[in-house]
Length: 269
Image 1 (cartoon, rainbow, N blue to C red):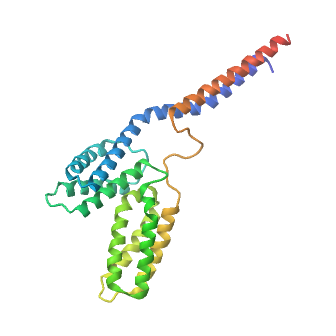
Image 2: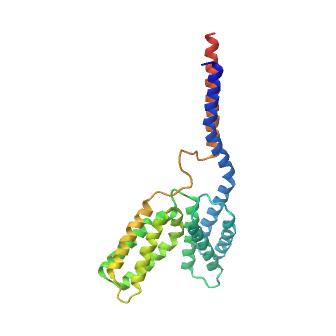
Image 3: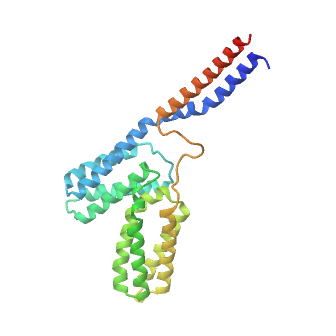
């Protein structure tokens, strides 16, 4: 094979190898402003939660107003279904309405602030979202619920079930971003069956226990399952600088190889 043909083939291979990292580089540079906006939203949500936890209601009002203003104009880093988007939006609107009320309950305010914090965190952190940190508390509650159901202690069961259901509602908007539709439907269906059974004066405890077992299996799968991400496939460097380094390294290595081959050819001429 002639030298010119080999060089042309080498350059063609180089072009193919560089096409992927260059495309990723351009894509990341284009999405950098959106990433910054998401970081700003995540920081606002954390400040909102902390100020509510500290009892600074006025500052919390300001923060939730900023969140409600920023969220509709932000480009989300992941593709989520419309139900999940609505759940996050409703959590923000409900918190804004609650904090605007002249009569506020500190416990209820913290509940709303926690829900918003977890939901926005789930949008920003795909691999270790905050809602997964509630696994131990949630599963422990389910264990106590099953004990109360076995003992058929209705008063104790109702109190513990309300506590468990409130916890689920807190983390649900965040869960819906990562957990598959079928799993979320299974969890909601299990809760519905238990709630319907509790409406009767003498509930069917077998139905309740079956619902709790269904909940336990579905939630274990949700907490332990892999997160859904918007991107899959080959390894993607985490920052544009890594992509630039990869492209530069590929170019330098190729040019070095071409220079070495040329040097060898001259030596043997």
